[in-house]
Image (cartoon, rainbow, N blue to C red; front, side, top):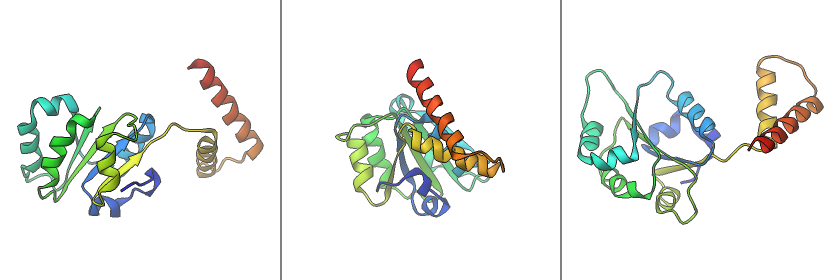
Length: 170
């Protein structure tokens, strides 16, 4: 099931265990992960590391701890190669376990992306690069939160200048 990042909340986290975060906006992905799992321990893995030690990873997932009520796993740099492992995990009881699969931009024909988009119990969240509209909205929210008064014209001017500057430096 496809969701927008701003629709992610604790209710969705309680109902679902497997998430795919894909796209090029790594900063926003990290920000959302920090916001959702504030003060919780996250176990970080790399896809290559998992594929070399699948048995160890599965044991880590299902081993219970007296000190942790919830386990959160973040799998970085994931590709379609991880599908077999995901299929193994999906068939098991994932109570109190959350797995986030972090991938760069996935094409529409990616098997990993297709499975997460089509299945109701899997959550797929795209993270696209920021555009001028999103940057303007973020600036308005930030300035409003900080109680800073500035005209929309000035905010637009700042955002346009930043966008042009980033185009030049890329």
